[in-house]
Length: 184
Image (cartoon, rainbow, N blue to C red; front, side):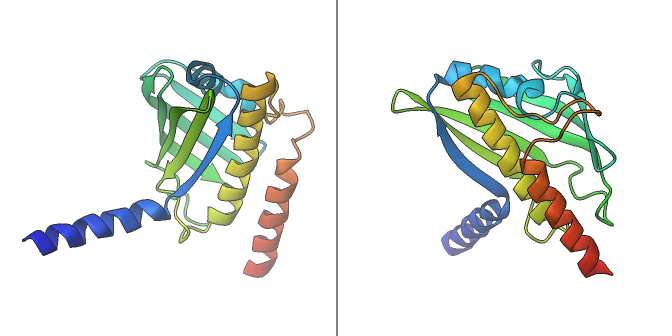
């Protein structure tokens, strides 16, 4: 019985390690970090519509005709944690539109060296998914924007529809183009 529990625990740890996750530090308090994360307009997209700072709140995100998703805020613990559930999703560059649906996006905040550390995990975004390369690259850009928003007060979110995309979108566009060419 003990061996079976150890095996299950080990399998759960391996499965957890496959989700897209990254950690970064900032020079602000955990509470300031929490407030920046819930300011989705300031780091992810100026096109976000809806409630981003209340449990049960829902918001819509979109980037041109490339990506749209509906998100529900599932947990808010000031200075500690922000969690979302992806209710619906669309990418124009993959076949299986269910890849993000019912996944969780989690920001865990802890105090570190007078600032804060953020453990970001997109639970359910796994390397086996067609969107993984593009999505992990894009999350890297958006999290860099979040880090800037926290540290300097200014992020690089996606602009309104008619604005210029932030630099990290260039890398995502290159990956999408490469995937499209490879599929042909």
